[in-house]
Each structure stands twice: as structure tokens, then as C-alpha cells.
Image (cartoon, rainbow over all chains, first blue to last red; front, side, top):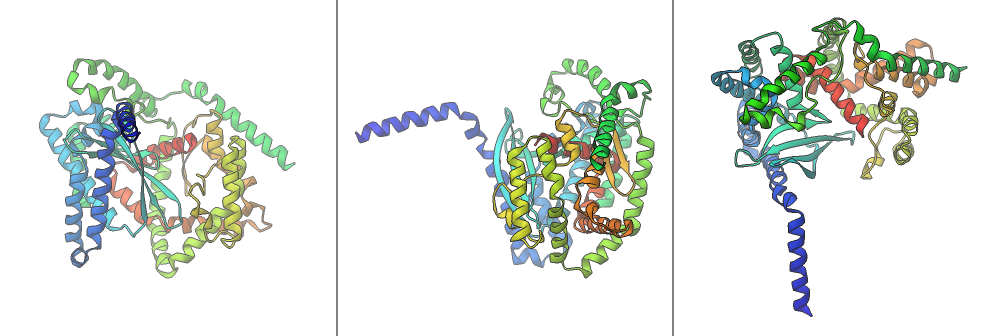
Length: 202
Length: 270
């Protein structure tokens, strides 16, 4: 009787695994981002971190952020069709500049974080190798701000290539701006604008 | 009489929004209709994309299918001027005032004021839930209002948020019209009031008929004083975010316009 039940359990387990191979496979994304964020928040609570000057804090945070984002993928998606208008050297510089810009801004924002609660929700597969992980920030007036991470494992590790806040995709928003600039100007001008911007925020 | 006026305003609104597509398609000016332009460009480039197999994943990206600007902006020049005006006002007056206000006024009080005004505007959200035939959401709205008004001391506290489903996401007349299938029309940047669209300008109807502040028997100076305070108090929570946004973007006007449309689309879809 008992053995029969175990056999049945195994069959059910196999059936479930067969039906749901994708969510099981995708489980890595949510665990990755959740782990990285709690690691970051834990680090910010340590006395060593609190003793650092602002610059030191920003460097520490940037280290973790760089592991979270897939800047190559992010840049590629943001430029979309415009990517081909850039020479390989320009593409490389673009990725570097975009990385520096986002790094500065995110590190600054994370430093401004004041213990709002962060909840993680479900993860959904968008396409093979791409998932969206839902998270919510509970603000001081007890409203839930949805912050979704879109992630890919192209680089061999789950990394974020887009952040969607209250329905607004960062990649899409930048894409609109870059398109606007590139409709009138050359890639070199866009790089120049980015260089100036990075200098200002850095 | 008030009802009649409301009906008249609504009707004229539908007429304007309903016919905007053919009417404005006539006097299309190249360069101003960015949305249109980039859609055409996209169509051309789609053909090129097929040649380059390596790039296919990025070109035929279903995830960002609708990646071009999603709203017409025929008033671009005027809108952009108003954006510059708003930004100058923000930098010169609003931000310094908000900073001073934040140092003087404890956060609990600012938060209470924010909660109070949000709770007060319950009629706008409730009526629009009903107009969209969202019965369950209307009940949630009512439950939130009831709890926060009583246990939460006239809305300054938010006990309702202890329940998972409360408060529901807010509804307004712009969203109602969106749910009824009416498009944005075109983008409008209002001086002081900020980004909106022709359709979302329906919020003036909301404020006129359903905002309890407009029901008060006060002279217009006091009334607008209250409204201005509410708006200012809200901004006092956002100055860091606004600064971060301005540091992050390359073209703040385009960024705000696109973000506004995307955010509204999400609210309408909910």
C-alpha cells in the first residue's frame, strides 16, 4: 500500500515536471535578483558600510549593480534598430557610457533608500530565456509601487536587461529619446551627449 | 441644471476625441508627428532586418512591438515651451519651497495630509469604477474609504492597507474613456498641471463634479489655495525622484511624454 503511494507520487511528480518544465527552469531568475537585492540591503546595514564616505558607499553599491545588469543586452535593446548605425567602436563606447550613466543613477537612488518594504511576486516567462520578475515597493503611504525586472540568462547568468516601473519600461523610454536624437543627428552626436551626461552625474 | 451641463460637456468631449483622427490627419506636418514618422521608418527597416539573421532577435522583438512613440504631438512646440516653463518654475520656486517645507514639517504630518486628500477624492474613484462596470473594485474602493474614514481618522491613516487587496488602483474619467475605447487624442503639457492628453483632460470634469473640495461653499481663492497645497504637499515627497529622473534622461520632455502615455496605458489596462 505504502509502496504504491510512493510510486503514484513519483508518477505525479514526473507528470508535473513534464507539464511545467519552463517555470522550474526559470526559477533561477527570481532567486538571483531576490538574492542580489537582499545582499545589497544587508550590506548597507553593516557598520563598515555606514562608516564609509558617500563616494565609498557608491563604489560598493556599484559593484553589486554591475553584477545585476546585463549592459550589453540593455544597450542593444535600447538602441534596437539604430544599433547597426553605430560602428563596432561606437557600439562599445555606447555600452560603456550607458553603463556608467545607469550605474551612477541607480547607486544614488539605492543610497536614498529608506527602509521601504520590498516584496517579490511571481515570475513570468516572456520568451525562451527571458523572464519578468515582479517586485513591489511599499511606500510610506502604504501604496504598492510595481517594479518589474526583465531578465535574460544570455550571459550565462540571470541578469537584468530592463526595469519596468509602474508600467514604464526603462529600455523603451530611453529608446524613444535615442530615436528622437538619432532622427536628426548622427551616432557620434548621441555619444557626445552621453559623454557630457555621464560627466555631470559621475 | 448641473447634470445637464455635465452631459453637455461629456458629449462635446466625445465629439472632439471621437473625430480627432480623421480631422487632424489632414493637416499633418512632417517632423511634428513623430509617432507617425517612426512607424513608417520602422516599416522600411523591418525589410532590412530580414537580411541580417544575427540581429533578428532584436528586430522582430515581440516584447517591444509597439516601441515607437505612442501618442501624436501636434502641439509639440507649445507643449515644449510649457515644459520649459514648468521646469523653470520647479527649479526657481517649487523645489526650494518644498525643501524648506520638508525640513520644517515632520513627515508624519505631510503623510497625513496626503492620505487625507487621497481619501477625500473617493467619489472620483468610486464613480469611475461604476462607469467602467467594475463592481468588485467599486466595493473595494468603498471598503477602503469606509475603513480609512472611520478607523483611520478621516483618512489621515490607512488601516485599509492591511488588507492585501486594498486600496485598489485609482480610477479617473480619463481611464474610463480609455476603457470605453477612446484614444489619447494628442499629448498636452499643461502649464503648472503637467502632462496630460486630450482624453485625460477629462479629469477637469472629475474635479469639477466629483471632487468634494469643489462642493465646498468657498470663494475661489480659498478653494484653489487648498488644491495648490494638496499638489505642493504631494510634490514634497517627489523632489528626489524628480531630480534623479532629470539626471538620468537625455531629453526630459520626450521621456516624460512617453512615460506618461505608458503609465496611463497600464492604468487603463488594469
